[in-house]
Image (cartoon, rainbow, N blue to C red; front, side):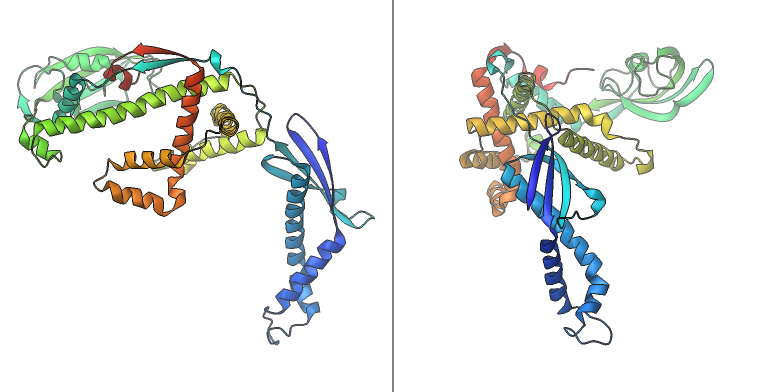
Amino acid sequence: MQSTLETLGQLERRLSVAVPLAQIEGEVGRRLTRLARTVKVPGFRPGKVPMKMVAQQYGAQVRSDVISDAVQSSFNEAVREQNLRVAGYPRIEPRNDGAPPADGALEFSAVFEVYPEIVLGDIGTVVIERPVVEVTAADVDRTLDVLRRQRAEYDSVFTGAERDDRVNVDFRGVIDGVEFPGGQAKDFAFTVGEGRMLPEFEAAVSGMAAGESKTFSLTFPADYHGKDVAGKTAQFTITVNEVSRPKLPPLDGAFATAFGMKSGRVEDLRAEVESNLKLELKRKLEAVLKDQAMKGLRANTQLTLPKSLVDMEAVQLMRRMAGNLQQQGMKPEDIKLTPDLFRTQAEDRVALGLILSELVRAENLNARPEQVKAMVQEAAQTYEQPEAVVRWHYEKPERLSEFEGLAVEHNVLEWVIAKAKVSDVPTSFEALMTPPKS
């Protein structure tokens, strides 16, 4: 086998390979011989079919398989000889229109990309803001209040609707005197203050009692999801059918028992809630820091992205989104997605993947067994039988892959923080955990 390598661009290469036809023909003959021992042809006993008949019936397919295998194995061998790191999949192109040249060799070219050289930037210039926050008694109280509201019972009242009240309404909306889709409903229920309705709608309902009606104007936001009404002003007529006020259950032993506290002690429930909030806080803090660290790495590292890897990543992201939309009930024929919609995201993901891979290699930041085990044990604590969960993960190595990935990310994060400019920013649990309004 002979091979030559050409450089077509920064990352693109062409590898030309010639495989002796005698090698191809020899393998075709061996495979046909093996096939003749087992092939079944009417009128002949197994193993007694004439070779000429076997070759006539199966020769073309066997030859095609041998050539395909030869191309693949020859390409892999040439890549090893040239010490190349292939990114993505090669594009195989026959030479001489597939006709063998005079020297009796099968020639083909493989066009592909190689992985780029990655030179990490100066991480000392990366600025990271590290939130400083603790779980307080007020945070525990707030969470317990949310749990109580989840189990609230509602009683009808005849006073004006207040925040957290559940209202049942009929409404009709028109724009320039004409009804529009989604602008009418009967016996429509929502909770005042939960943000499900537009602020102007909630403001109009607030203070209204059962049996009252009102007409008001509402201007839809310019970026409203309903494009037909976005930016337009509608006139709504609304009638309140019922106002129900929540009655929260007392924070007592029965409430604690309902949430799994066998002791029936409120103190134990508070301790459980505090423990869960601390775990939630730990994960959020790491996510916030990791986001800043990854952006810093990306901004401070120059590299050329292999187009083949970006293309594959964009296709994967598109398919994942299409699958999610189908799970939400959208018909496949109504999903109009293309890989180009995900190219920017794909570029970021590929770049970070390459950077992290190089960083882990260069700084020996691989996952350590004790790290992985600690993460598995921590995750198992949320289940009723933690020991059984840990055992299940260790029964098969592939079940640990997610935790190994998390451990590597944690190691990278610690490495970046140790070198970056980190400033501590005091904040509250509620502020950190509440996503910003768009």
